[in-house]
Image (cartoon, rainbow, N blue to C red):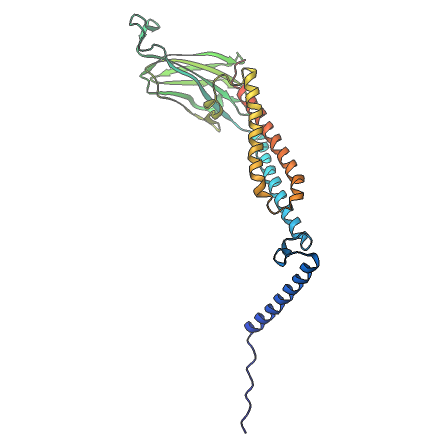
Length: 298
């Protein structure tokens, strides 16, 4: 009589597989029943807000929270940058040109202190305290250096105008460099330096040893024309442009950000976001206008 051999108990992996398969079958059967009741295809039942409204609302909340969170972070950063205490000097080259052109008669010459200047060039630049703290003698470890790269020498340098007129600035000429020492520059104080050089400078560099003071060229002034926002037409052009630009960029990004949101709910979300983009564009325009007007002497 042969002894019957019993099968070994199933391993844990087989048990898990059978359990998952049975659960999957139950889910499929349940889905088919609900689909038949609603008259919809089983493959689309999981996308229906009737079955999983919470999932779609979570996606909506995540999208809105992400967009508004990003806007809040940007606005907070800009507010921090605007309100923090800083020492900052900016400069801008307003003009750089040769005084005598190639077709100028040889009888015409430029004289400075009874000395003729060969290949004379005229440069004008302005230096502005864009920080929110005063800069005085204690900050000048060494004078501010304005180097005219490519010029043979500096024939004359003078401060032609300042705001306020009481700004006291000393200039000293050293080869192709003008050294600037200011007694006191309060926030928004500005002065203009006019220089006549021998030879045309390829570039103008401003540097110096000032304690805790940042020195940089104004990018707004670098890429804008000298008299920006001096006429009403400038305001008409700039003010609609930036808000419209922000609006168009947001309008392009919104469909991608709202893909998971039902079509009927998108308008209620899109309108506040587009309105916020317009407000940010208007605020940016006001900021640019205020920054540009700082460079005007009057």
